[in-house]
Length: 189
Image (cartoon, rainbow, N blue to C red; front, top):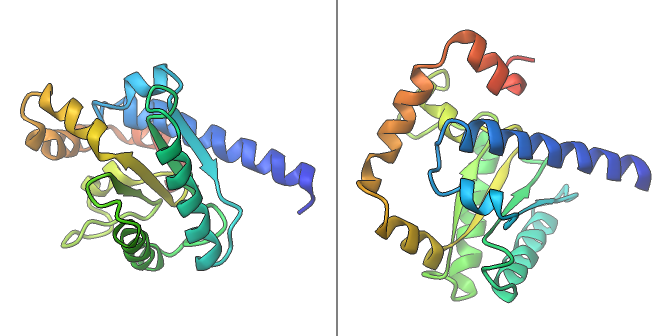
């Protein structure tokens, strides 16, 4: 793929992720903490061109370093999108261990954490067609790099954060087929 096509593809990928963020994550209020940083343009969407585990881990590492070196007022969080690999959810799931190992190896436990999203996301113990999986389904494999200090601050002011998963599952279970197709078109193509 030449540079111009690659830039166009990355622009479309960013647009897809941004639409998912606005329509699903914020629109359905699946993450009650996402609207403010999105409104303040403090969420970075980084599209990795990696097609090997090593290259993707390097990209994630560089994005952690960028997050660490950038004031929270400028950059709250980063979504690392891996559109060219990890199509298989089980491969993606295994790769998460590498990311968590990187956090531990760098001494970032307590500083950063990772949240995970994938087109075929499936919670342990659930069937693939279970609607609860929609809460973590995204148009591409995504690693959400989170500042733990920021998460702790917002959780202090949020009533009953333990109820968020159940509330989210109820929200996606209540969607009509038409709403599902509109919000998750990549699942129906």
